[in-house]
Every structure is written in structure tokens, then in C-alpha cells.
Amino acid sequence: MSDARYDIETDGIMFDNGGQFDIGAVGAAQTPWWNRTLCAVNDTWVRLGVMEGDFHWHKHDGEDEFFMVLEGQLDIELEDRMVSLKPNQALTVPARVMHFPHARGRTVVLMIEKAGVVPTGD
Image (cartoon, rainbow, N blue to C red):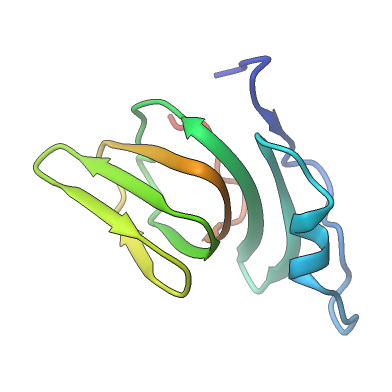
């Protein structure tokens, strides 16, 4: 899904392995809906998202998706419940589970996903 509201890229990795970087500084320099791959760890991507407002219902057929809130509040609506995450709280959404992220104000989220994931869903 391509949507002009989202500044999401999956081409390229911002930081090479072995190099130090400041996640807080990267997040602070961005505006919503920015989402990039910070680094790769084996067969996974560590991504950073700066969000505000609602995303959309979606799922990933072949990948789990890990969310950890660094700043703000992220409510993740699942088909059967709502999970509210505040700083230093996390949730793994299993593959094939429909979910709808709602960022309550400016929210910075660290995500860990299988390399090649389509962030907007399948």
C-alpha cells in the first residue's frame, strides 16, 4: 500500500554494523509519519517510526512485528482488544493478526521485523 501520508522507506539501512548511533537524536530530528531501517541484525531489521494519529488496519502474513515505545503513547487495536503502550513498554503482534496502531500525540517507536517486511501490511 502506498500512501502519501506516510514517509516510509525500506530501501537502505541508515547505520552499518559496528557503528554507534543515537536513536533519540534520530527520532527527535523527524516528523510524523517517518519510518526507516536503522540497522540490520542477522535476518531482521531494527526500524524507527515517528508517528502521530492513526495508521490503518493491516497484517503481515509471514512476519511477527515487535513494537517498543520510546516516547509518547501507542495504542494498538487488535480484533479482540486494545493494548496501550507507554515508554519502555512493548508488544509483539504475531503474524497474520490484524492490527491498527493509534499514536496518541507525537510517538516514537522502535520496531523489530523480519528483513523485507512491507511496513504498511500485506
